[in-house]
Amino acid sequence: MTHITYVKEIFCTFFLLWFNVKSKAQPFIDVVNFSLYKSRPTNFFSSDDNSFYSNSFSINSTLPLKLDSNNLISLNPFVDSHRYQLKTNRGSTRYTSIGIPIFFIHQWKNTHWKTSAGFVGRMNKNDDKDETKNIYQYGGVLLNTFWKKESIKFKFGVYLNTEFYGLYVTPLLGLDWRVNKKLNVFGVLPSNMNAEYKLHSRLHTGIAFKGSIASYRIEDEFFYRVDDNYIKLFADVYATKKIVLTVEYGHSVLRRIRTGKRTDSKTEYLNDEKANGYFLKAGVAYRIRMDKE
Image (cartoon, rainbow, N blue to C red; front, side, top):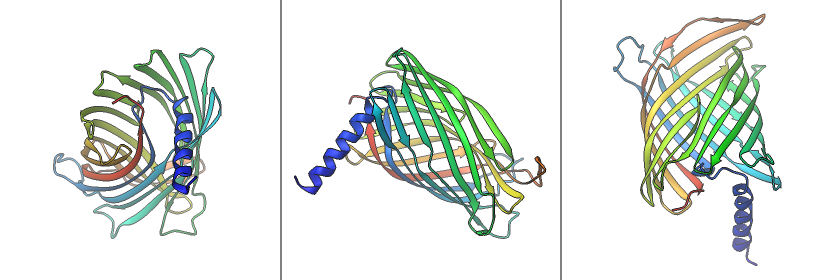
């Protein structure tokens, strides 16, 4: 058996195990995804400061391990690196987040229910402050999935994380809906929601919402917080059956940039800047689609 054939067999076995547990309504899984992101200010909202600039890149992956027919462990390591600059700053600063979320997925005897429980550990820091302590965050996710038929599945749960400004807790509501052979609607709010339409076997387009809250340690008591929401149009071009080139264009909504200080379990924000703008994102992914072409 050649080395290439051996690697192919490993990959085939790897993903067949993953498919046995994952929802069929979820249209795809990105095994590895790399993307570049650029955001610039606009003048759409006169009340905004419109001074936020960012250049970012991210790498994330999905590494599943089947325990038995009803249980699965998934590792989802990621690296996010952002260079942010506000008009009020003298220069830009790079912030990095590195984490390895671990998820346990259980298929109940009642085949209409599935539960995912995850531990999320990450390091969020200012790259210019290597000596800074207390740069670690710990969180958890509990997400239940319920369905009566394979084409539409509902999700609900909770997410919490020890942000540098305090404990963050939010409910989760999600949907995996294969409307027809061309249209999929899927996501979990408040993180994301996507409507994907297949124009061609090699071209998928759509519209999506993305929301995120992140805090980074500046110094021992000080942190940088970015609350970001945006609406985007996207196009996924399938160079091959598995290699996908992605392009996104959109605009932020209610983006807030804050620097804060937390002492004695009390948080004080030193500023609060609104900084909406457009963004452009491009990337490449090794993707496994789970819907039938």
